[in-house]
Amino acid sequence: MSHIVHLTSVHSPFDTRIFHKECRSLVKAGHTVTLIAPHHCNETVQGVHIVAFPKVKGRLQRILSACRVYRKALQENAELYHFHDPELIPIGLLLRLSGKKVVYDIHEDLPRSLHAISRNYIPKFLKYPLSWLTERIENLTSAQFSGLITATSTIHDRFKDINKYTIVVNNYPLQEEFELLSNTEWTDRTEAIAYIGVIAKERGIVEIIKAIGLVNCHRQVGLDLAGVISPSTLAEELKEMEEWHCVNYRGMLDRSQVVQLLDKVRIGLVVLHSAPSFVVSLPVKMFEYMAAGIPIIASDFPLWREIVESANCGLLVDPLNPQVIAEAIQYLLTHPQEAEQMGKNGRIAIERQYCWETEANKLIRLYADLKISIWPVSDTLVDSEISAEMMK
Image 1 (cartoon, rainbow, N blue to C red):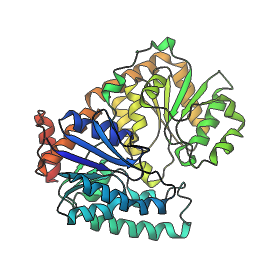
Image 2 (cartoon, rainbow, N blue to C red):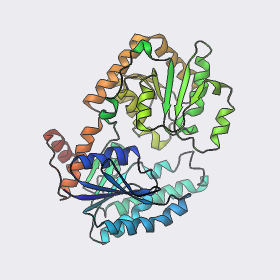
Image 3 (cartoon, one colour):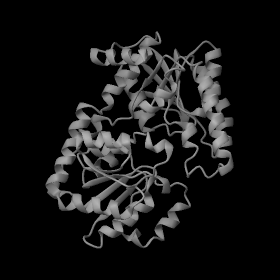
Image 4 (cartoon, helix red, strand yellow):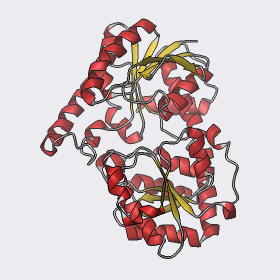
């Protein structure tokens, strides 16, 4: 049994990947797990010891708060530290200099994501040089860490020659959450569409709302929208759209509320624009829709096409064309048997291939390879997968 500390200066202490997937999986494996995160108080939740520091606003303040994170991390005197934010790289390096084992969990391809439209705080003329500099710094420092975890295979390919202990831990859904579904009969589901996640222009929200308006010219369909609107000023702009009356904005939902919502709708949307970081991403919402047994309408990116077509679990569209999105929605609503079967196909694919439980074994195995006392992994197939990945 080991003491493992997770660190974040940006994410909520109850972030799905960090808390519900990684930290809880480690607790279940028998470890003492501490999560240092911005929160209002110290507490223990589902076996995870949360060590809080005050929330701050603004990127500069977050960077400055890293000193507080470092002090709290040293006080824990753990066997391994696992951090989740690029701005904590200096803290990770200091912990390595202190003789600690340190793992960097890379959630996104940061240099590519700097080009995203939503990063409006970065002047356009600075985005490319900043992206270049960020990549050089991240590559140089990542070689110094004990291990790297990447959220997608594309990010893995970037780092695999930099650090030999680099593995992919995909952000697949927790099966245990969706086992709570009431398995609502298809005919009892409302004719509603769901979008869950960050609500932003580059994530297709304008096209989604326009598409729902087009569908409503033929039948009464609602859009259940859940998540944070980014930037906050976008909220008023969206509410001024003539199609907004079709939207049921639910704000932020907890995990159980997400499952309950997806148990009642008929389609899940993930129509992100073709930003470099999006094209190679694996958005968790896509897999959550599949886990909930509903067909998906997704952007026609090569990586996503491979998943959707192999599982036969939805339709692919041009994310910039509201008319095409509307036609896909209309098709699924007017072909209920085909839509229901697509939903079932997605659920089967989750159970067989895209579940978190397999990814948790990868995480645990990495710790073992770093010579951390670890609960044994019984799945020899997963062991062989990790060994093969380490040899790449």
